[in-house]
Image (cartoon, rainbow over all chains, first blue to last red; front, side, top):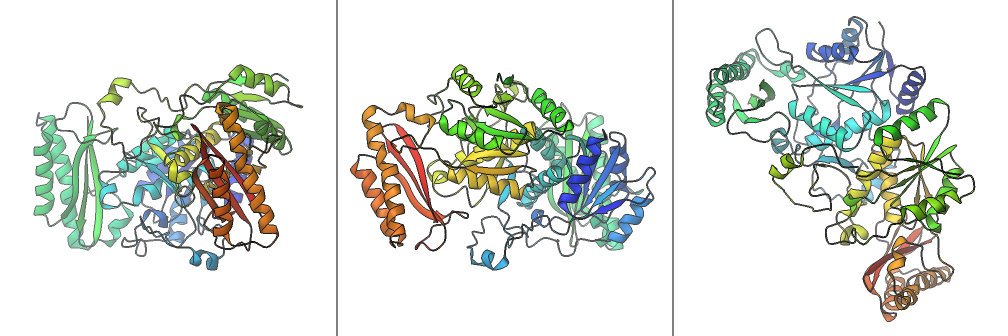
Length: 304
Length: 304
């Protein structure tokens, strides 16, 4: 099935409203493109909940700091469309805007305005000045090493919700903190969107699927398997009664470092509040971010 | 006409959606109650744009700091309904929720969680943690003396937009900075709502209408007329060629202080960016906040 490609905000909203007027429900799968099997599984999940599916493909500058990998983030729009066509029952719309932050303001006027520069994202030259902050959930883990990422994610997701007006939106649990943060934002701002978390997908060797995996050298890719291996080991250890988080955490750190990875963080946190847990009693999730060469990978494992 | 009173979020959204499905458009006038002629003029304005009118009456704790006047803010729900009934063509719905920040979380669980307390609003005990920040426009003027007010306003307005899903929302230009900030938020987050600014309304003697005026003693009320008088004088002076803002500003300050007022701020700013202007060339607005006794009043005057 050939998806309809929409690039304009108004056209997108008009499509959604005309579908809703016909009694159709709409599922949204937001992506930054360079689709892999993980994304396709989000779409399959969304298909269970709504009549129609919109996939957004938009590399959001608002969630990258200037020193991050916006410029090298992989993209392949043509390939993405081919993959979407191959999905059983297909996708109805691909929303692929040029720039979600272009408000038609003259550039000259912008340049005159002083830059405050408190928190610098790749949007710093734009006139955009509204940000959604989820105070607790944005702080730890990825929010610590990437201070602009979650305000950028929350804000662009709110924009997509307001443009597409979906009934359901599906997020991957690979980005666990992002998923919880979006759930919280939706609750706190009363968005009329049901947020669904979809299970993390792994390559056959265990590596969590990610658009960034393409940048790993064969050697780095081999080393990076230490992440998933150590997470599965932690889960097994917990099952056999090892419930002291500091010990489990230390094992994960040592395994990844032994393989040549550079740890950004390893945290064992409550599945909902994402607050650090000392002893496993209720459901926790072990979250990891680590560098292999120039590639920062994240992964996680729920332990219930 | 007797308005329908709705207190529940879901019921409110269902009403709006059923009306939209019938091809009706919806106008929202958000208020904190204790309605006066200024509010009624917002409703009259809204009636020009949409088939149906929703007035929200909700005293929003999120925009008051703990040392501010939430507890003494006047209210009279019964009187408000009487006033709304008397409006020609009337109001269709009054949305009057009990607590927009109650997410059904157990209080005990909340108490366990640490308070960070960076910015304290009257919501600090609640589990709410998502805030919308409009970085430049929230800073100056009222934002300087009331640091939580605009994140509170932006956030509750986003909630109301998501619950009521109006086509049009009308805000009073009395709260000039609030009006501009909401316009910016709507643009930056792509809300499908047209924001309309409605002219400030004055009592016969010139005092800007405000729910807080009821707290003025007869003497304070008399003194407070210095605000509007000095603003009209500034406008006349500008018309006769006095275009140096520091001088105009000084005259306003002196007039209000001479009458016994305590200045919070007097600023002459660009009508859109709200940035300070030194010489009047394009449209500006003179904005004032001043205390008379325990009452803080705001007023403004556009000069084009």
